[in-house]
Image (tube, rainbow, N blue to C red; front, side, top):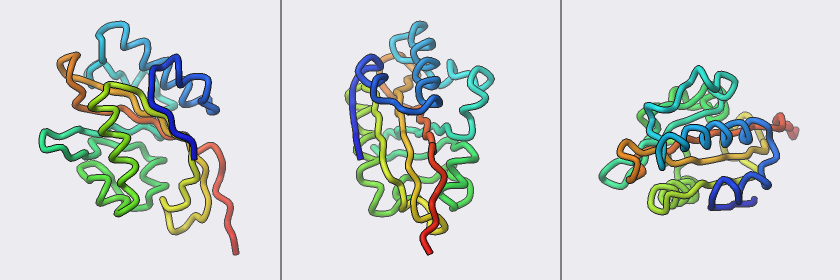
Length: 162
């Protein structure tokens, strides 16, 4: 597993997949409008091919994080039905700690986050899956991060061990 927090310039060279590069380019294009883009500035029609692997996480006032939405490919990988309204703890259990730490740092430090990892734990039906994740801050007021735009790229099909 590889993790990196930072700016778009510091992260772009580490991204292997085309989808995350496209997501980062799109986020940078809406940053040009405000310091931190808002949820309202995210136009799904501008990134239709990313929608199955895109999610938005709400940073609640009480410190919790909750999925506002998750694309169909993400929901398929988690194999838990609709993720909207659920917390990372409800989805991942104890394994949510590292994800929550990443969400907190993106929220508190207004940085981007990139991870490349084996995510075998996502689904009991699949024993191996490699993915990349990119987290990008969103803000209703341009200052305080209150949502996180995420994109996961499942760039290798699962390998079954039997």
